[in-house]
Image (cartoon, rainbow, N blue to C red; front, top):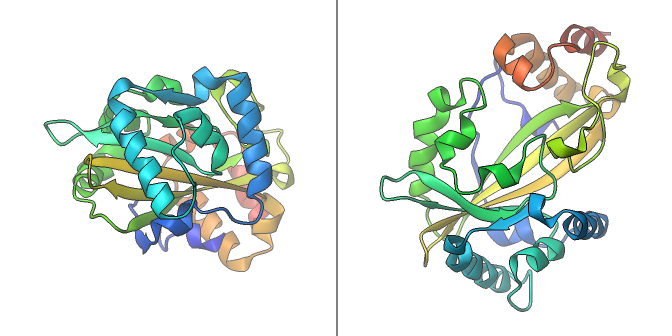
Length: 260
């Protein structure tokens, strides 16, 4: 868990490191339960979690080719079937004629309080506009990086958040409990998105994979490095970002609890 924090005050960072794309998407221990939950989610509400515009079809075809090359699947699968066969969420983007990546589709079963279906067809800067200061600090850098991805490797990064529930699927339509001043910090969950960015050389597409982890916050507190990283991030987080992350009501209590 400590690997998700960067030294110094909180800020949005690319935080990229190289990885192997096949390793990111291949099955690993614990995936069976994730896939079972994905099947249930896609059976009940496919319209929320699997959306593919016609323009995404060549990218999905190439994604299947990549997965077969990596030994993840044995034959091509349609968008929903693919979302039920692998444990990671996937998004398919392609730059427009101005170099701005456009989200053309994918399958997101475990969103972190955002509605995937509302983002499909939108440019990356529009998608990120809801996050305070993100476009200003990383927008151009992220766009430039994504349009220059080289085939054959994955670039890995992480995002983190704190939530009131262990639920993996936190689609806004579910109206799940939110953190409040009355929430016991010991009941909070630490949520990690491990992300992979992979080039699609034949189509010029961009593959964005997300693997989700959740941990009880007391587990993080018991890890000295992770505890110190979270404490520094919370103490230095700008108010507008704390508000966006739904941490404002509980911030003081979290800091006191981590320091105790």
